[in-house]
Length: 93
Image (tube, rainbow, N blue to C red; front, side):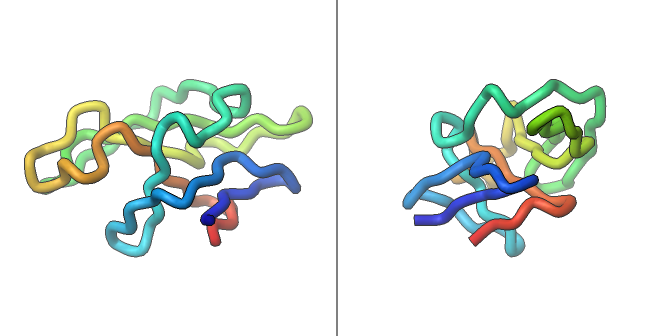
């Protein structure tokens, strides 16, 4: 079982993560939506596609742009479709 934790709270937990470039991508339904807040940040990866971000909000504290996903993955990244990954101080393990 792999968990993502920030600010002392489990944000996501699953035995079904996909690791790409050292990042665990969690199934969308394994992530607690109540901690996610839409962000306007986006980025582009040549082989995965365009990423959209979420900020995390836990106990009144915000971790800006700490989660991302690819709403429309390119064919080469099909294994991470519908999944969310974390960074920026989120402990995954």
